[in-house]
Image 1 (cartoon, rainbow, N blue to C red):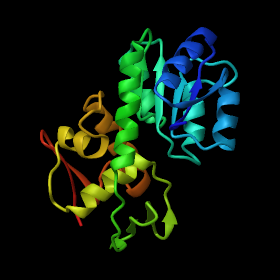
Image 2: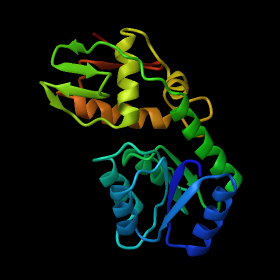
Image 3: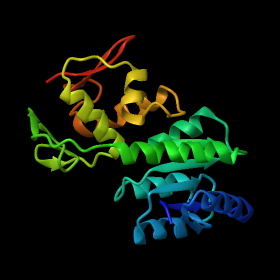
Length: 227
Protein backbone atom coordinates (compact mmCIF):
# COMPACT_ATOMS: atom_id res chain seq x y z
CA UNK A 1 0.00 0.00 0.00
CA UNK A 2 1.02 3.65 -0.40
CA UNK A 3 0.89 6.59 1.96
CA UNK A 4 -1.36 6.28 5.02
CA UNK A 5 -4.21 8.76 5.38
CA UNK A 6 -6.73 9.20 8.20
CA UNK A 7 -10.23 10.45 7.32
CA UNK A 8 -12.17 11.93 10.25
CA UNK A 9 -15.82 12.70 9.45
CA UNK A 10 -19.12 11.74 11.08
CA UNK A 11 -20.90 11.39 7.71
CA UNK A 12 -20.28 7.72 6.96
CA UNK A 13 -21.30 7.92 3.31
CA UNK A 14 -18.75 10.68 2.72
CA UNK A 15 -16.07 8.67 4.51
CA UNK A 16 -16.93 5.59 2.46
CA UNK A 17 -16.68 7.55 -0.79
CA UNK A 18 -13.37 9.19 0.13
CA UNK A 19 -11.92 5.88 1.32
CA UNK A 20 -12.90 4.08 -1.87
CA UNK A 21 -11.52 6.82 -4.11
CA UNK A 22 -8.21 7.12 -2.23
CA UNK A 23 -7.71 3.37 -2.17
CA UNK A 24 -8.06 3.40 -5.95
CA UNK A 25 -4.93 5.57 -5.94
CA UNK A 26 -3.11 3.08 -3.69
CA UNK A 27 -3.43 5.06 -0.45
CA UNK A 28 -3.92 3.17 2.80
CA UNK A 29 -6.96 4.72 4.47
CA UNK A 30 -7.99 4.65 8.12
CA UNK A 31 -11.29 6.13 9.33
CA UNK A 32 -12.71 7.79 12.44
CA UNK A 33 -16.23 9.13 12.99
CA UNK A 34 -15.86 11.64 15.83
CA UNK A 35 -13.21 14.01 17.12
CA UNK A 36 -12.12 11.93 20.11
CA UNK A 37 -11.68 8.79 18.03
CA UNK A 38 -9.74 10.74 15.41
CA UNK A 39 -7.43 12.31 18.00
CA UNK A 40 -6.75 8.96 19.64
CA UNK A 41 -5.91 7.36 16.30
CA UNK A 42 -3.45 10.14 15.49
CA UNK A 43 -1.79 9.61 18.87
CA UNK A 44 -1.57 5.86 18.38
CA UNK A 45 -0.58 5.67 14.69
CA UNK A 46 1.66 7.34 12.15
CA UNK A 47 -0.16 9.00 9.25
CA UNK A 48 1.17 10.87 6.24
CA UNK A 49 -1.89 13.14 6.14
CA UNK A 50 -5.21 13.72 7.92
CA UNK A 51 -8.50 14.78 6.31
CA UNK A 52 -10.37 16.37 9.20
CA UNK A 53 -14.00 17.51 9.20
CA UNK A 54 -14.78 20.70 11.10
CA UNK A 55 -18.17 19.80 12.57
CA UNK A 56 -17.59 16.60 14.56
CA UNK A 57 -19.27 15.00 17.58
CA UNK A 58 -17.48 14.95 20.95
CA UNK A 59 -14.56 17.14 19.81
CA UNK A 60 -14.76 19.56 16.88
CA UNK A 61 -12.16 19.81 14.14
CA UNK A 62 -10.63 23.02 15.52
CA UNK A 63 -9.96 21.39 18.90
CA UNK A 64 -8.65 18.20 17.33
CA UNK A 65 -6.24 20.17 15.14
CA UNK A 66 -5.07 22.31 18.06
CA UNK A 67 -4.32 19.25 20.19
CA UNK A 68 -2.61 17.45 17.31
CA UNK A 69 -0.27 20.41 16.82
CA UNK A 70 0.97 19.96 20.37
CA UNK A 71 2.66 16.68 19.41
CA UNK A 72 2.65 16.25 15.63
CA UNK A 73 3.34 18.11 12.38
CA UNK A 74 1.27 15.69 10.27
CA UNK A 75 -0.31 17.62 7.38
CA UNK A 76 -4.00 18.38 8.01
CA UNK A 77 -6.58 19.29 5.38
CA UNK A 78 -9.74 20.66 6.98
CA UNK A 79 -13.09 19.64 5.49
CA UNK A 80 -15.80 22.16 6.21
CA UNK A 81 -19.40 22.72 5.12
CA UNK A 82 -18.98 26.38 5.98
CA UNK A 83 -17.94 28.77 3.22
CA UNK A 84 -17.07 31.71 5.45
CA UNK A 85 -13.62 33.29 5.32
CA UNK A 86 -13.41 33.37 9.12
CA UNK A 87 -13.89 29.60 9.35
CA UNK A 88 -11.04 29.08 6.89
CA UNK A 89 -8.79 31.51 8.75
CA UNK A 90 -9.60 29.84 12.07
CA UNK A 91 -8.69 26.47 10.58
CA UNK A 92 -5.29 27.86 9.62
CA UNK A 93 -4.94 29.50 13.03
CA UNK A 94 -5.43 26.14 14.70
CA UNK A 95 -2.75 24.55 12.55
CA UNK A 96 -4.44 23.20 9.42
CA UNK A 97 -2.31 23.18 6.27
CA UNK A 98 -5.18 23.55 3.82
CA UNK A 99 -8.97 23.46 3.65
CA UNK A 100 -11.68 22.15 1.32
CA UNK A 101 -15.25 23.39 1.41
CA UNK A 102 -18.13 20.91 1.17
CA UNK A 103 -19.60 19.87 -1.16
CA UNK A 104 -16.27 19.13 -2.77
CA UNK A 105 -15.04 17.38 -5.87
CA UNK A 106 -13.00 14.31 -4.89
CA UNK A 107 -10.63 15.09 -7.77
CA UNK A 108 -9.82 18.43 -6.11
CA UNK A 109 -9.32 16.73 -2.75
CA UNK A 110 -6.93 14.20 -4.28
CA UNK A 111 -5.05 16.97 -6.08
CA UNK A 112 -4.48 18.80 -2.80
CA UNK A 113 -3.40 15.60 -1.06
CA UNK A 114 -0.92 14.84 -3.83
CA UNK A 115 0.45 18.39 -3.75
CA UNK A 116 1.09 18.28 -0.02
CA UNK A 117 2.61 14.80 -0.08
CA UNK A 118 4.74 15.66 -3.11
CA UNK A 119 6.21 18.69 -1.36
CA UNK A 120 6.95 16.58 1.70
CA UNK A 121 8.64 13.89 -0.39
CA UNK A 122 10.76 16.35 -2.36
CA UNK A 123 11.76 18.44 0.60
CA UNK A 124 15.41 17.96 1.41
CA UNK A 125 16.63 18.71 4.85
CA UNK A 126 19.65 20.98 4.62
CA UNK A 127 22.19 20.43 7.33
CA UNK A 128 23.04 23.86 8.63
CA UNK A 129 24.80 25.06 11.71
CA UNK A 130 22.65 26.44 14.50
CA UNK A 131 22.21 30.21 14.20
CA UNK A 132 21.88 32.53 17.18
CA UNK A 133 20.26 35.95 16.94
CA UNK A 134 20.30 37.54 20.38
CA UNK A 135 17.82 35.61 22.52
CA UNK A 136 16.63 33.58 19.50
CA UNK A 137 18.26 30.32 18.40
CA UNK A 138 17.30 28.66 15.11
CA UNK A 139 18.20 24.95 15.04
CA UNK A 140 17.60 23.56 11.51
CA UNK A 141 18.86 20.06 12.28
CA UNK A 142 16.20 19.52 14.93
CA UNK A 143 13.72 21.90 13.28
CA UNK A 144 13.13 23.99 16.35
CA UNK A 145 13.50 27.54 17.62
CA UNK A 146 14.49 28.50 21.13
CA UNK A 147 14.07 31.77 23.00
CA UNK A 148 16.39 32.04 25.98
CA UNK A 149 17.16 28.32 25.49
CA UNK A 150 13.48 27.36 25.75
CA UNK A 151 11.83 25.54 22.83
CA UNK A 152 8.90 27.68 21.69
CA UNK A 153 7.12 24.82 19.87
CA UNK A 154 6.86 25.96 16.27
CA UNK A 155 4.69 24.08 13.81
CA UNK A 156 6.31 22.76 10.62
CA UNK A 157 5.16 25.70 8.51
CA UNK A 158 6.13 28.26 11.16
CA UNK A 159 9.63 26.81 11.28
CA UNK A 160 9.88 26.76 7.47
CA UNK A 161 9.02 30.47 7.36
CA UNK A 162 11.49 31.31 10.14
CA UNK A 163 14.28 29.27 8.54
CA UNK A 164 13.73 30.87 5.15
CA UNK A 165 13.65 34.43 6.48
CA UNK A 166 16.50 34.02 8.98
CA UNK A 167 18.70 32.38 6.31
CA UNK A 168 18.21 35.44 4.11
CA UNK A 169 18.37 38.43 6.48
CA UNK A 170 17.09 41.76 5.17
CA UNK A 171 15.66 40.11 2.06
CA UNK A 172 12.03 41.09 1.64
CA UNK A 173 9.61 38.33 0.69
CA UNK A 174 6.15 39.27 -0.50
CA UNK A 175 3.26 36.97 0.36
CA UNK A 176 3.24 35.20 -2.99
CA UNK A 177 6.94 34.37 -2.74
CA UNK A 178 6.48 33.01 0.79
CA UNK A 179 3.52 30.93 -0.33
CA UNK A 180 5.53 29.43 -3.16
CA UNK A 181 8.67 28.85 -1.07
CA UNK A 182 6.93 27.32 1.96
CA UNK A 183 3.67 25.82 0.65
CA UNK A 184 4.74 25.15 -2.93
CA UNK A 185 3.45 26.23 -6.33
CA UNK A 186 0.49 23.85 -6.11
CA UNK A 187 -0.97 25.42 -2.96
CA UNK A 188 -4.61 26.42 -3.45
CA UNK A 189 -4.91 28.88 -0.57
CA UNK A 190 -4.49 32.65 -0.55
CA UNK A 191 -2.08 35.23 0.87
CA UNK A 192 -3.89 35.44 4.22
CA UNK A 193 -2.34 32.08 5.04
CA UNK A 194 1.03 33.86 5.28
CA UNK A 195 -0.33 36.61 7.53
CA UNK A 196 -1.85 34.05 9.92
CA UNK A 197 1.41 32.12 10.22
CA UNK A 198 3.56 35.25 10.59
CA UNK A 199 1.35 36.47 13.42
CA UNK A 200 1.53 33.13 15.23
CA UNK A 201 5.29 32.98 14.69
CA UNK A 202 5.77 36.44 16.16
CA UNK A 203 3.68 35.51 19.18
CA UNK A 204 6.10 32.66 19.86
CA UNK A 205 9.50 34.25 19.22
CA UNK A 206 9.00 37.97 19.88
CA UNK A 207 8.97 39.49 23.35
CA UNK A 208 6.53 42.13 22.07
CA UNK A 209 4.79 40.86 18.90
CA UNK A 210 3.45 44.36 18.24
CA UNK A 211 7.00 45.71 18.07
CA UNK A 212 8.97 42.83 16.58
CA UNK A 213 12.74 42.56 16.82
CA UNK A 214 13.24 39.76 14.32
CA UNK A 215 10.44 39.53 11.75
CA UNK A 216 9.50 42.91 10.33
CA UNK A 217 6.84 44.09 7.92
CA UNK A 218 7.73 46.21 4.91
CA UNK A 219 4.36 47.84 4.48
CA UNK A 220 2.80 47.21 1.12
CA UNK A 221 5.56 44.77 0.15
CA UNK A 222 6.08 41.84 2.53
CA UNK A 223 8.18 40.50 5.39
CA UNK A 224 11.88 40.32 6.23
CA UNK A 225 14.17 39.13 9.02
CA UNK A 226 16.56 41.49 10.78
CA UNK A 227 19.59 39.72 12.20
